[in-house]
Amino acid sequence: MLITKLYVNYFGKFTGREIELKPGVNLIYGDNEAGKSTLHTFIKGMLFGIERLRGRGVASKDDIYTRYLPWAYPGAYGGQMDLMLGDRPYRLIRSFHANDKSFEIIDLITGREIKLKEGHISELIPGLNESLYRNTISIEQLRAETDAELASQVRNYITNLSIAKSREVNVEKAVRLLKEKKKDLESVPYAAQLNLLSEEIKAGEDWEAKIDFLTASLKDLKNKEKYLSERISNYKSPSNQQKDKLADELPVILEKYRIYLELSKQYSQLNSQVEELRDSLIEQEKYLEDLDKKLEENMKGLGSKRFLYPALSFLIGGLSFFLTKSPIVAISATVILLIISVIILATTNKRTTAISNAEHIRASMELEHGYKQLEELSHRRKGLEDDCDGLHDTIMLFMQEFISEDELTYEAVARLKETIENKKREAARKQKEYNELLEKYRLQIEKIGWELSALEDNETELIKNKEQYEYLSQKQKENKLELDAINLALDTIQELSVTIHDSFGRQLNEEVSKIVSAITNHRYQDIKIDEKLNVKLEWNDNYILLDRLSAGTIDQVYFALRLAVSDLLLGEEPMPLILDDSFALYDDSRVKAALAKMANRSQLILFSCQTREKQLLEELGLDFNYIEL
Image 1 (cartoon, rainbow, N blue to C red):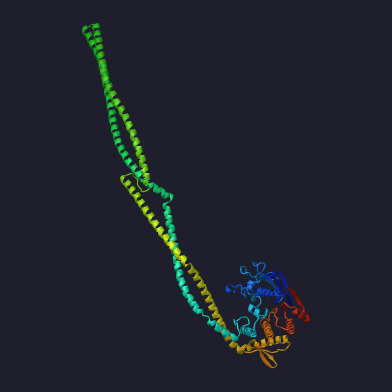
Image 2 (image 1 turned 60 degrees about the vertical axis):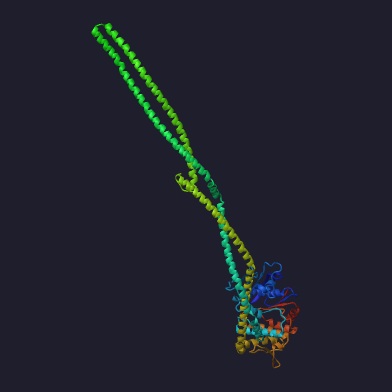
């Protein structure tokens, strides 16, 4: 793998910085705080990402995410890096921002995105993981460690690599520190703390159950309060107020019913008078008709007599002539008889007519007066009937608002009165009951509100205890896992003490020996790692424990071990070697030897704040790509 270009878009102090890297030696020079460690961390971040720490880890010395947030524009956090794998170029594009995290790999020949199943760079570069990268090809600035700690770290790496070439076992300390660490882990009183918290949580959960009960009760009471308020509002609604106002008119309706009964009685009496008068008038009309018939018959009788008397006169005249044979006598007798007949007829007719006319006039006048009286009574009856109908309709309309009745009867009115009075009593009772119940609910709501308010702090304390319990439980699990890892490491170390050289220990010894010999000008040519994981160096036919040597020598062995392990585990894909001011403890000759040894690697990226490396490279006559920050 070769790193060909860095595009530091937004990372730490850098914004829009582009750095081109070449095969062979790349020397990146800069004063302190020029950004060398920032670029070193950027390369690691582009390969493996940068996770944001949470909880107590935020803003600590291990919080890489916060340390390298862009200075000028914290909202953007990312960049790109070009690689060569074999003869194929790729571009890694990554956003580190916790709210917009992403990782893409682009094949620069086809332009296609390379899909990773799990998003790990090891899917593209087999065998490369963050632990292996950190422990082999990437060497950061040395930390202030004692010789013993450095030696322990060397043994730790050997143990890890002996167990599995691509899997890291959590062996944090050297063998001599593992038991002390185990004792420390076992001494933490997690169980007692968790038991105490469990009791407090149990008490808090009891209160929480009460809170849930009170909350449910409060919700139920508020629903009941709302329902009652709506019921009370319904009583005060315009429709109900109109109904109540209508019910208040009952006395007026009862008075109208009393008037209706009186008018009905008057109507009945008047109706009887009208009927009697009508019957009387019918009789009167019949009498008048009989009188007219009688008069007509009399007139017919007089008419017959009118012809009878003249006929008798002529008959008598004829007899006189027959008897006397005297026309004068006969004529005289006839004339006299005719005059007498006329006088008799006239007198009789006049008397009869006068009597009939007087009776007829009297009867007619009585009939006319009767009809006037009938008309007046009928008019009065019609007025009473209209008044009764109006009262009847008014009362019936009022009644049908409250009861179902088709007829206006005393019983119906009595039921109406009883219904309205019952409704009023029931409404008053309901109103009183609702108001009392509403007041009761409101008092209960207020009481529960006080109780819930008093329990607020307990709920907060419960949450705090649960969080603490969860935290301690997690710590206990981590403690157990760490103890298991330590036990596993101890067991594994014990097993490896005999077999380490039968696996790849011999090859590792040879590779480390070659590198250390070259760096130390052949002062130390044979490195041994025995079954107890002690590193020894051959000197004057003796083997000296690593931790007895100088810090510089320990660091060089440590450096050689990294190179050897890198070549052993990543030999199929040549990897760059990235050094960040790694020669602080080296003298010039050993730096020069180390540079000469590393010059044949496919790529060396060397960060330095000194000019020594540049001068030594020039003395060695090595080509190198110089970049000054």
